[in-house]
Image 1 (cartoon, rainbow, N blue to C red):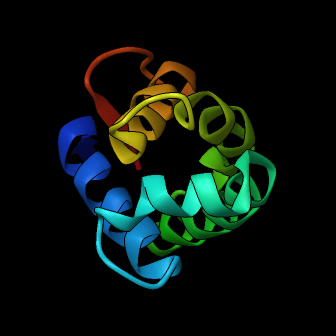
Image 2: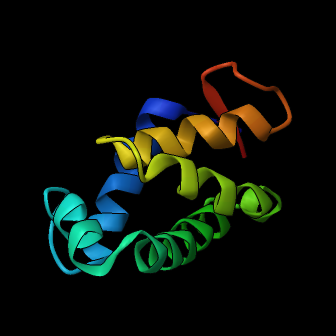
Length: 98
């Protein structure tokens, strides 16, 4: 199965927003208040659980790198999805192979 990185990014943004106690708009505020290290820990755990729910636990190895890089961008979920796409079965095709 394939999931577009755009769709995956939107879902990840929503999941991350809910994980930190609000909507998508609170993600940047959470990073500023808790720091990148704590945000990366929470976001990594959230993304790993989402990948497992999608049936793609083998992609979890890419999460740490992906989250670390994504914290420097405004569309964190989208960037995480693109970083995972760079490391999945068919690299850089715009889809996450689930």
